[in-house]
Length: 130
Image 1 (cartoon, rainbow, N blue to C red):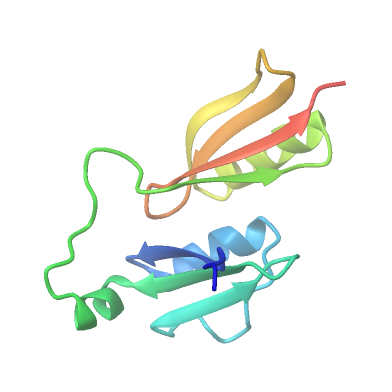
Image 2 (cartoon, helix red, strand yellow):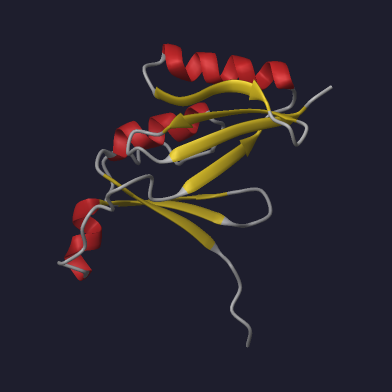
């Protein structure tokens, strides 16, 4: 049997803060899960997105440490238009999240921006130009 890609997982320091960020990006995350040690959401197409508290990971891997030197993972969310990239970025900034790169017109033909989730992971927002 060939393995198949099934899950993207993030290790988070503050579950509620991380889930709030990804809910703002439209992920349907089960209600009442902010205090859970492990949370999953099924994405369109069946791929799963999961969050685990640092303590959960250390329960089976006691030597695990938070990555240093840069973001641990990069994620990208498609927006409907260039204006939606700008609006989503502005809304996240207004909500107190940290911007990494303000919206710009990329040479490859997309409106692009990068913001950071509560754990410092880069999250790209993009849409085709014109």
